[in-house]
Image (cartoon, rainbow, N blue to C red; front, side, top):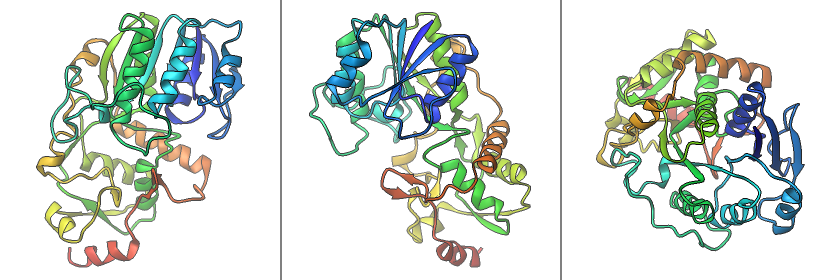
Length: 334
């Protein structure tokens, strides 16, 4: 197939490109060249998806079998790309998120769950917000219709080249050894999907001409926080001691869920559905998930090859990771 990847140079986009090339597809990438180098074997077109002129230059005289958009964050930008591309491709895959669902993370979600009330024609340059992904979905459907569009609502992505840094933060902290503050109930279920598995499933659907919506993450209950952090200890070989702190203690210490201790969410009503997305449709369609320990080990190998990150990991503008003095204070009482 002849594929266009909007993005394609970092994390999930990179995983899509790697898998597409491995399968023998021809790949064009369209990005600004700021997030990382394009891989060997692609035709790299530089441009800004917010620029009508850059998009017009991209499509001039071209046609692709399918487009995969892993980088859409603003409905305006996705609508612009979709309108420009609809006469130049047969199919549009948009990678959305479980954030698009109104009830997530408080309740379990599936393909029929309501999405956030964000319109496709939302003005440009909106402040970041979970509702924007729903507007992006509507922009794709408005341009391509349900018969030519595939929406993949991803869960929590991990793996080599992760650009947010949740799993890398844990690996680097645990690699230091000693006593490590481990959050909440060690048996707390998680749903973590390797970006490479996500990309493989997305390409499987694309190659079959798949359309519609798929909640795409690991099955509920496929892993636990204990399995995740113990896999980090094993991968790093640090011998770190995991010291488990109950949710109540972390709450009293005002530890911010999700950011100070990445991937931790307390067992409270507002977080009760975070690891309970229904993946039955994706599993029936062939989604396969590799062992969590394999993803963790591969991510640690990549970190060692990459070297120090050079800057704190961030979720948006928020720095990830607990202050070491605060961690020590909490560990003292455990």
